[in-house]
Length: 150
Image (cartoon, rainbow, N blue to C red; front, side, top):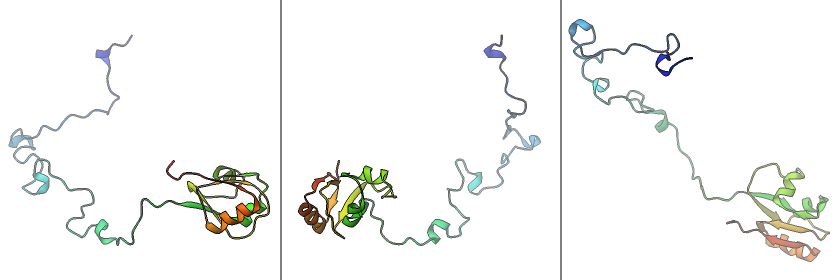
């Protein structure tokens, strides 16, 4: 049975530590292998990430363009003529994805009023355009607005 005190690392996995600053005869005395002065000779010295030796770094050379609105809500859009072609009684974001109508992964659904609808269906969406709402109500559809904040 092996004991805790008898455990050894794999051959070559451990190395002897460099004994720095132990006199001129050791070969690593005086400056301890760090050369003379300069950033790398200092305690805690070293270059920051992205430093390019005084040359303008890549992060500053690349242009930053435009404004990126991190609070913008991305809607999957669907028109009434697309809804009219579907053979679904209840329309929602999940049912449209299952039917293969929506390809993206937008978290919200908006129904737009392009085209006509002739059947009374149940529609759950986060937003409806004014024309879509009017046409759906005229066709006798049941509308449910899902709260965007939920």
